[in-house]
Every structure is written in structure tokens, then in C-alpha cells.
Length: 94
Figure 1 (tube, rainbow, N blue to C red):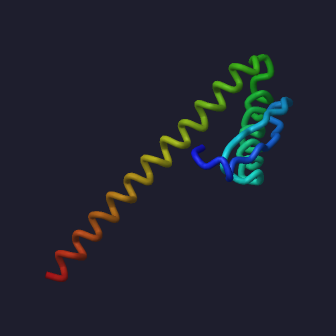
Figure 2 (tube, rainbow, N blue to C red):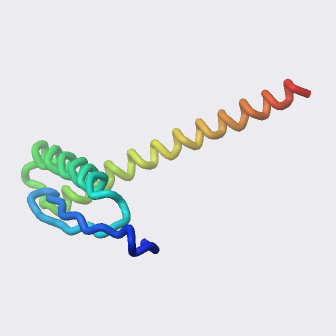
């Protein structure tokens, strides 16, 4: 968060607790992220009511990390396909 001019403080409620998030993203964006996390945590709680909030948070982090990893792999594959396409396109012009 290098630029202090763009820093915002946004209060969000996740899993029944209020948190102040300080960052350079818009409050709407931060609230959207928090809402996604909150929904995921409550969905886990509904399926596993005996889990502690810590374990629910860890499971949520694992689910989100898995989604991020999968999307990164997909992005890498698409990038490789684009490079391959561009190379074939360039070879065809010669």
C-alpha cells in the first residue's frame, strides 16, 4: 500500500464479527470480497456445525486457495495457447 492517498478503511462483517480492512481498493470491492468469504464460511458451518470458527476459516482459505490455483493454471494454459497461436500465425506470414 505505497500510496497513502488511496488508502481506505472499510468495515465488513465476516462470520458474525466486524473487521476493519485497510487497503487501496474501493469499499464496494472490499465488501464484495468479504461477502464472498462470509457466504463460504456459513456454507461450511451449515454442513459441519460442530467445527470451530478457526477450522471453518482454514477450510475457507483452502477452498479459495484451490480456486485461485485452478484459475492460475487455466490462465497459464490459455497464455501458452495464445503464444502458440501467435507463433503459428507469424510462421504463416513468412
